[in-house]
Amino acid sequence: MAKKQKFPHLLGSKWTAAQKTWGWRHFQVINRKNEDKWVFAEMMSSCDSQVRFWINAKQLKDRNLWTPGWTPLKNLE
Image (cartoon, rainbow, N blue to C red; front, side, top):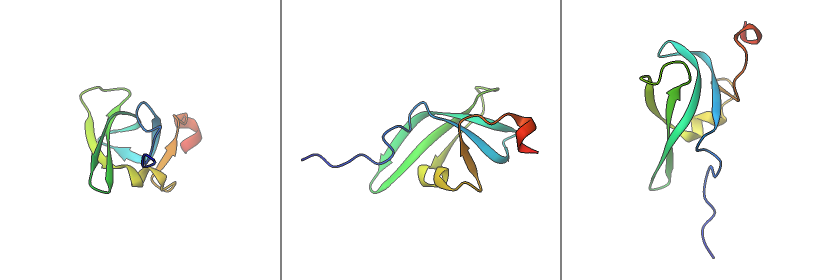
């Protein structure tokens, strides 16, 4: 039996950062990387494709840092 994949729907998912990150709040996962027991997500800003960074996918579960989907900015204030 194959091992269950961690974060199976990570690729292509959309996220809103609780605080501005690299000047932006709305991001999409464009790549994933498995390293041993860790899963990493490459995040890209939805407004600036030049803004990209890697994050431990486990951090996306912290609702104090990230919210799934794109939350309108007026709802963040």
